[in-house]
Length: 366
Image (cartoon, rainbow, N blue to C red; front, side, top):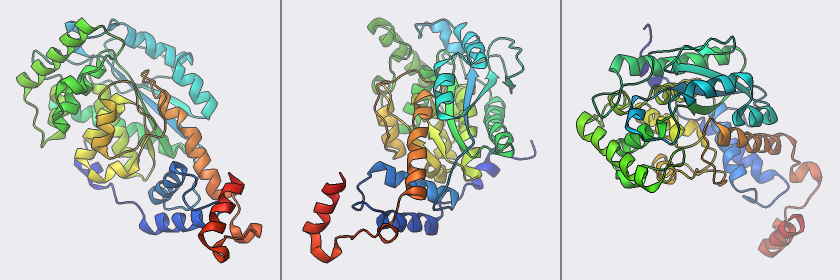
């Protein structure tokens, strides 16, 4: 490879402080009490810092659905068989999955990437970046080699860069891979030190007995492989997944090119932890769309220092929560570009009448 992962990680820069400050100032001049639009205002400031533009817009956006299989499915940790992964990839490609429906509503392009599905898939719409046919069973040894993990990360970077050349300027993370909540729990426990009892969730909807077994599987994988916390690529290789490594590359690639990346759920969050460890500044380019029902997700977002915008009790994955959050991104952008200022609308700020007058003006608008 002509470029290394550290080259990409090293190119992730801090947000533009001047643009962030200008956006905050503009928001305070709009016809509303300061801060009254809540998270939409903080999102607008963040988008300005990411892009360097006070009034950004994202006409072309893409959902990157990374797909791969997991050898740990041999341990019976999922309610669905591994054959569902390639079947769902074909569903994405035919436009029939939930993420396709929601992406059409949000005006986003779905890009389905085979980075490690354990089957041959031939479709003109598929982006083929297959590193290998699924991971190995991580309770018998590393899920993959270091070189394979690196190749999957760089595949994610390359998908983003290809999309940017086509005009896409905002990315949503999505995934498909039966068994990937197991790998994500192992990654989260390694990166955060949080016990497996709190990081392992029900995934596809397993019962209590299978849930206890899943916890033991993750614990055995961690004991056997002893992933090196100081080396995020080692962690991904030993207990991760090809699609999770691919999403790590998507996040790094987006951040390196100053593009926002909207995180979906728990699996996307595990990739975000890896990206943050590789490039600490990358977290500033991440937008947390929602908090899922997977029990570890709330703790994972806290570890990243991100606040979710939506609480919808979702646990589907695919990028569905991330795509729904695009409507809020659009709302923040339109507030910045279309809402009148006090000066342009000839509206009093209430400064002359003091605090009481300002509050009354706010209530009148509410």
